[in-house]
Image (cartoon, rainbow over all chains, first blue to last red; front, top):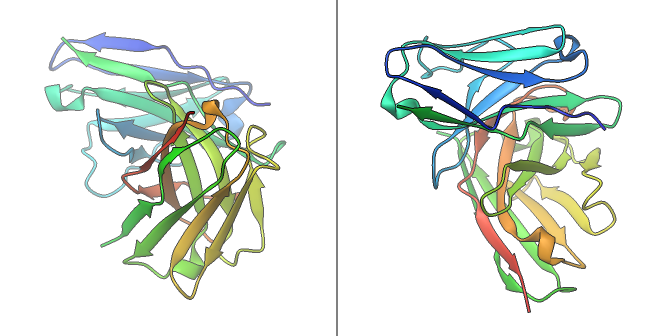
Length: 108
Length: 122
């Protein structure tokens, strides 16, 4: 089955740029979606189709996807961005949705 | 405003059954696929099952196939998950999520409910 690999944690100072990666075999050929989950809350979509932002998500959130790595980039990080972030793809070979293991973003 | 409200969670013994419901509002329910996703305590998200807008197509994670059944009643704007032969490892918060298309195989989860907790323990 298809596997998505994320770093368990990323730490960044306020105002800096956070990059959260999602690795998978030829993931560049798939559509990658990202959600944010704050403690005790339901997940919220932040990026869809690799790089599109839902309404209400700040422009500071952006995405890219190429080769074997997709990346969620958060510019000018704020304390309120501290959360778990999960990448997600549809694996057509198994007809399964697949989530990455999640990355905890800590704002120092 | 899209709203998804899960219910039906609770404490159940191993081997028991439970049926979860997800009441949807704020969108034309039968034109969108829906999905269930779970999260064990302190763990990440795990996709469980999905169903097309018409209900004709269903998909299951290997970990629940043969034990769980997803269904929907488009006349009641409600999604269901029938869970049988429950195991301790099924303990999790179960979220329902709306897919932005009628087909499961395309699209993304654009809205999520708040979840309902299922605890499998003796």
